[in-house]
Amino acid sequence: MANPPKVPIAETNPVPASVQDQITLALLANGGIPRIQAAFRQRLDEAGWSENLRNYVTALFRSGECTTFFEAMEKVKERVGLEGRDGFEGELVVPRSVGEEVAGVVRRELEGICEVGK
Image 1 (tube, rainbow, N blue to C red):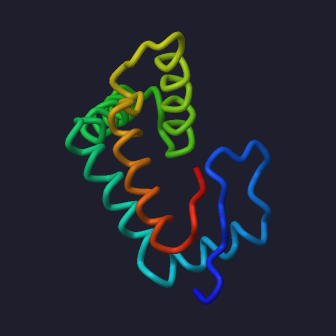
Image 2: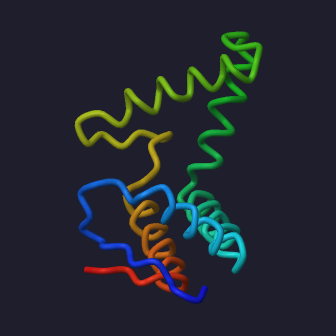
């Protein structure tokens, strides 16, 4: 990218859409998005989150509580919302450590395509 966008890390206002578009295009062009997705998937798997989700959804369908994907998604979102309250970390809440690790991956990818301020 000839003139990499500058993105202040402590920006309180949303990054302008034009800058978001530049960043997205650059991440698509250099393979950053698949690397971020792979890192997130790997960390979730290592934390046992993917298996917990799979087991929960399987139980929803086997019990007859859900019969469609959309019903299951609503139940998952509801449960995640309930478990994520007041600092409680249930089996379907993405562990804080996973979020922190993946945030580091995202930052490294961003630093490779734009100037990230402090």
